[in-house]
Length: 130
Image (cartoon, rainbow, N blue to C red):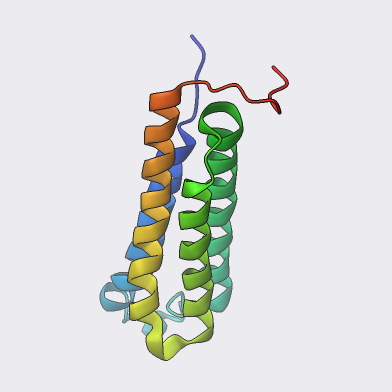
């Protein structure tokens, strides 16, 4: 029995984990600085979460594009979501207004990619080498 990773599901999970970190973690863990632990607004942790979500998302969407549906639509939605996610890092005072649509777009891109992969299963184009 061969084990396969569902990259879209993993992408959705990492996006939701990022949203939970950004939205709820500051409320629940605001007492951590009293113990010398600071992950709230930790720039390294923030970028680490963004990079993980980006790498998993790009791999997942590229795999779906190349092997299944050949549609740029999920990639476009994902790209817009990540532009908003990076914008959140630069404009902290607009953080919540950029984070919510970013996460919604990234999760939507993974969901659409997942649906396209199931509908098309495998679509051959002239660039297919298999």
